[in-house]
Length: 255
Ligand SMILES: [Zn+2]
Picture (cartoon, rainbow, N blue to C red):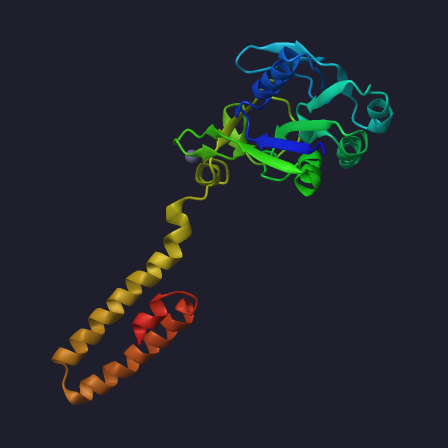
């Protein structure tokens, strides 16, 4: 039984290069493939262009609202595999048609595409593929920090941005993309740093240390009347801290 595959990754993970390699492997063994891509991707028009300079004409351009079943039903049975580039741009219905084609015509379809957009949300095509593909394979590229990149950050006029339309093609209107890991995405695009995230926790930690020091000092140095008085204040502080800390491990240490 043939399958619907989804090979996904961030930009620059070599998806299109692999697609051309797979096409070459089939053809080397005398088998026929068809290469499809959505017409929404204006990069290279009816060609597939890879970042390492390979290119090839596609067999069919899929238009945004077209009923893909008409084309798929016309495909002859001597085709061994259908390869789809930039499949994140297809509609849910078009992915459903590719699935039907795989199962009812018994020809494999390998879709290549992005996992998510520059806001980390799935595209219509990628969402549907995650729901129904038989096989999903992640492809990797490297973030500027050396970790695996999962997200595509959009850069407009040299600045990272998290607002704008879902589709803005690379290289057009000063739009660029950079593949980032999760941590770098939070830091560079959403401007959330490790320090900011832990700031509240740190201030509670500092107060906890001060509380413990006071408690020790009180036990060592105070007279019994003073001890009683200071203890009541310390209990108040402890209760307040406990409330703030009820969700984490420091609570235990207060007892
Ligand atoms: Zn990173």
